[in-house]
Length: 340
Ligand SMILES: *Cc1c(COP(=O)(O)O)cnc(C)c1O
Image (cartoon, rainbow, N blue to C red; front, side, top):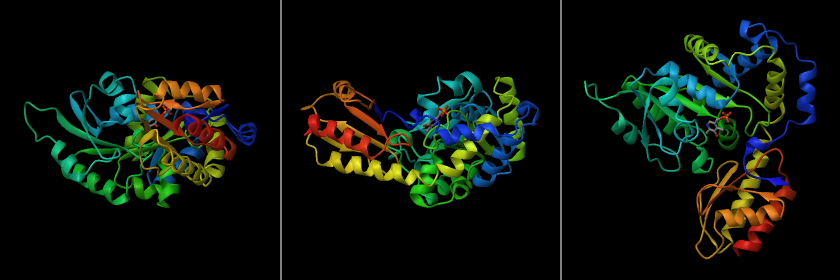
């Protein structure tokens, strides 16, 4: 099977599994796991923050960050297609008691005017604007990369109004590789930021949330409260460290392959729109003349290819560690056969 559904589908490589064997471990909950501590220090450095904490998932990073930043009744300004709104089971409302203020961005990106327009002035009636949250890269916008200046601009608007800032960096390293911009630069205007090890980096479990020491201390309280504290997590951290050493530079290969898929789609008549491909995600729409998303996904499956249905006529394919040039050929052959 050539699985283009998501970059979460990667299986840990043999070398990654071997990295677990020698990893020194201890009780993470008591700060006694040396490998986890090393990973957290390394990610804090990478992101230019004082401290970091290892989490079971990216979702927990988002939800805990929101809990630290927001009190019940506070409002989060974020882009409408973001993971926080659409894929976390209503977590901001359920866990932090926060409201969301969705903005319709362009390719997942908001302008400083939009953010300024969304900030509420202090009043007895309004929810309190408390947090600006951005996604780098913007997943449902096709892995779009925020330019550094746009991230900085909206962060300063947020700061002017006393808001905190949060970056969902599930695929931040894809943005780093694609734009050759250091992760710490992207994160500089953001009080909290995290990277996921289970997306393009190819590890089976884990994400690291970073921020000021004070922020991480508060994040730890909620991690403990929500049952996210671990024990000998060094075996997991060892795989994440292996990913940092071996799976970052190669993200460029995923981007090249995604570009090739997009070039191929452009030659096909039953494809109407393709979102600009900047990293490893290709999102495109199917014309009324051809199969719909469900039909195309079934046809692909018959040919040993898995693609994602993201709407009646919208498809998402994602390149990653476990799809190679041969997989891209198989995928393009399916598209040629049914979308020409
Ligand atoms: C996958 C993803 C998450 C959640 O990460 P998990 O590790 O799957 O919980 C959050 N935000 C974005 C943009 C994602 O793509």
